[in-house]
Length: 156
Image (cartoon, rainbow, N blue to C red):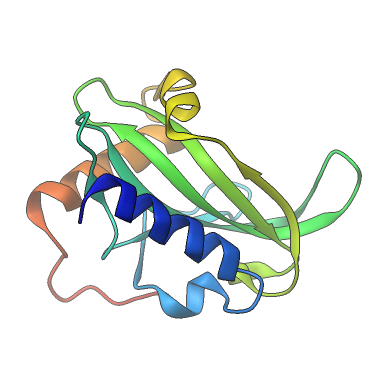
């Protein structure tokens, strides 16, 4: 699938996010262990795709153990993110974030951030050693190289 077509599909998925919870239509695998706050991060094992510039675009679900709040005070329990990853330099940046009131992308959309791929690429930052970002980079890049893992079980 070429890049413009992939981006149209991503845009369509984001547009449909209000009516069809993303977590229900995707095949997720947990990335690493839960954080000390009880947050779980899941990677769509069907989704990572290499872009023409060499970066990888992946879908992630951040399922928070504790309620988070937007700058204006609205509560949310999960995010679905489209994240750009540079496997060689271990850098990443979110291209879009859709936050949901409930966990596992359930409930109404609370906030939405979308930026063009060029802005996301310009915003890429190194993944710190032993960080959640590094776990994401490794999981995305390993999945791209090795393919969908055998015998894994999606989260409940």
